[in-house]
Length: 128
Image 1 (cartoon, helix red, strand yellow):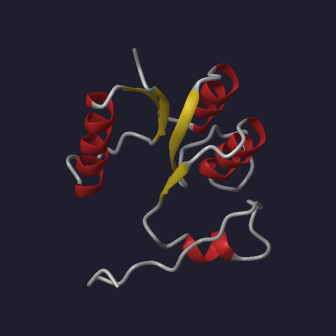
Image 2: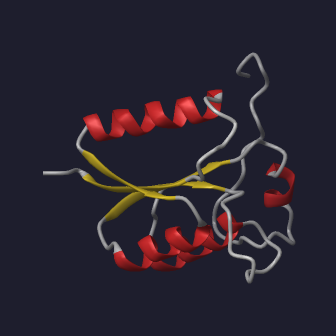
Image 3: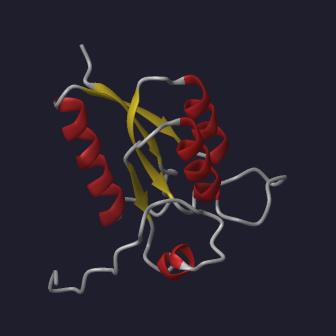
């Protein structure tokens, strides 16, 4: 029996074994070892389909820069996935994956994402 479904909406990276990709794989492996089912979505379109069809989701890992189709608007794919997750699930924990450059955009009042969350300041290199 699984402990619940966790969606990993993170694109495959072509640059090989990056530290980020390796860390996400380790996190996924630990979750599976602890009884969670992990559903992968490589594009925003795939992630939205998972959100529409999976009622037992207990958390999501979403890349802000998730690829979208050419017909989609100008905002990153992760923005639409976060908006849909917020509308479909009540209090769903979502872990946002970003390279850090987008944090100021996310915290701005004109951000495409609105909700009761706050973006904490990034940690310094020494962890403080």
